[in-house]
Amino acid sequence: MNSTEQFFYDNAGWSYDPKTETSDQGRRRCARSLAVAEQWRITNGAWFQWEQDDINDEYLTPLFWCGMYLPGHKHPVQSLGGIDDRGPTYARVIQAELALQEMTDQDDAQQRRELATFTDGG
Image 1 (cartoon, rainbow, N blue to C red):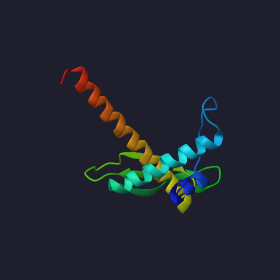
Image 2: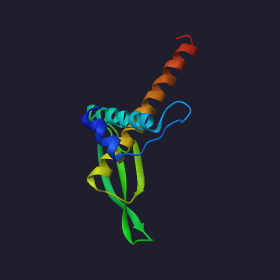
Image 3: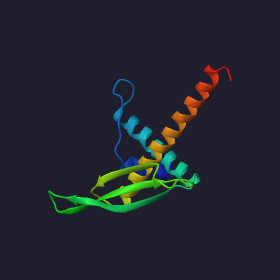
Image 4: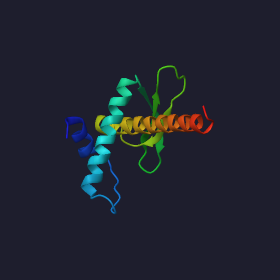
């Protein structure tokens, strides 16, 4: 595991399918995915804007919103609000998760375009 994968292994959440993998295998898979997404966002020139979102009524502490932007887009391509920890470790995890979602969405859109071309005979 490289240092980026290790960071996400140590700091991010994970999921796993107990039918096909162990918890540790799922944790490693998720850490790798976030590391790939972080590199993808760097390569694609994505940046993030953080703003105060609201106040957590229970604790009277600020909540935050994070938006992910790509070159050529006036509006965020991904966002998440209600974030109660804006520390550098958790912020990096949030940003990688937003990048992973955008990367996945773009891959899905590309697959749909390819399928449409194939099914249209084109």
